[in-house]
Image 1 (tube, rainbow, N blue to C red):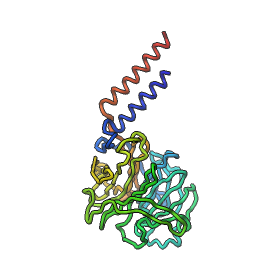
Image 2: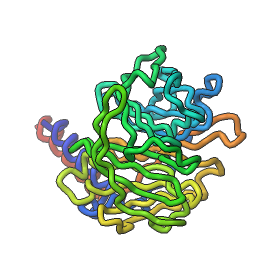
Image 3: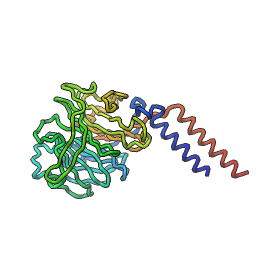
Image 4: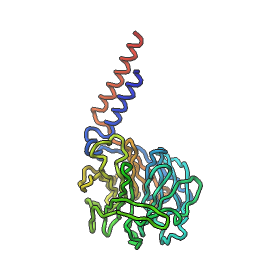
Length: 318
């Protein structure tokens, strides 16, 4: 009984440590600090120029792609290699194989986006295998396959609560889009619409590099913050949290984190944030882990849990 009580109290403390009193409306990015930095295996180029990352809750792992489009790798939350799968772009008509957006749908199913034609491909991960993308269910996210050059779709994320997708276009103009994607072999249909657009900037950011929904964070369930989105900007070196009305609720300056180009962001069910950065000549892309600093009240809650455990143990001895 004492152990169960302690676990419950510590779980509550962990929740408070992650978001504090502001969990109802914001995750408060300003409370986050670096907690880990890990080199991503190069694997003959597959792991270089990391451009997107997504969290697989049912596996407890991360998936990462590089913008050379060689394939996808599965990593632990501390950067250890678990598996890889290569991409075959034959027949897609892709000119640069720019794998810039990545989302996890569950059950080993991933969606990768080719930046310039803004086409999303859905496929099942198989360690050691290769996937012919043109034979997979796909959809033009904007309804058009016309190339927008090196300023296209940089990120994609899905809200696990309703399956709604969000994407960001880098710039010229910068856009945040939202809607549904119906995948089909040969091409599906998209209801994605532009939610916000800026000719030279958006949300005060010079460009948009990735987007991440917060609907999968356990502590936010039932709160307004579960509807919020994280937006990453490589050029501005910032991560911001916005609500669905486009208001910036919190932000984090990433300029002191690394000189490498930060291109991808994801978050797990505990609220831990993961960022990936291109190698930028350093020899390896990197995975950065960010966690929030506990608020003072959290320590009091944890202390009360320890006291409760000691009291229960004393009663058993009596």
